[in-house]
Image 1 (cartoon, protein in one colour):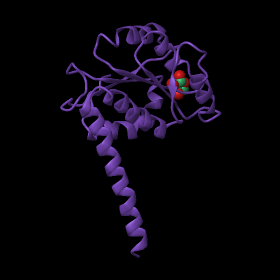
Image 2 (cartoon, protein in one colour):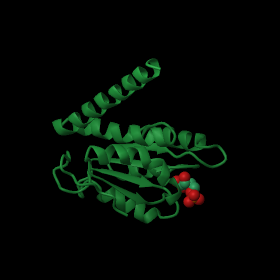
Image 3 (cartoon, protein in one colour):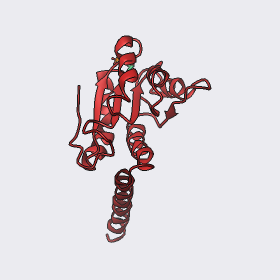
Length: 178
Ligand code: RP5
């Protein structure tokens, strides 16, 4: 499944997606919503794939090993329960891999958090908060990483921050004008 946006201000050297989201299951998709809203609004090109470390191990391997040559710059792996996905992706690429523990299961994401964050030394996975907030922060962080070498990506983050600040101050004004 490809959900690439129009990369009019993409930081990538190609016209394809620069961020790749890999979800362990279709059931994880709703947790990507805030990240997709952010990326779409700021026209950052991305793709979304459903690939599992244990249900489709060959395809997950293929995805990670070919990611750099396909123009991806950051991979975000989201999975729940015994979440191996981000670690498996990281093991098969030297691109930065951001891990997003999916909420759900009997432990509501705490299992996925520990599974994702507790990578043994040598193969890092930068791990974010459980669920929607983690997915949004991973998307923003991916832009920050790309912003180190691409001023347009740095500008995306600056604009998002300014808009977010304005929204909070507007809420404060509304709250205190009643
Ligand atoms: C993980 O198992 C997925 O990432 C999902 O969070 C969880 C449950 O998957 P489903 O049984 O809903 O497909 O691999």
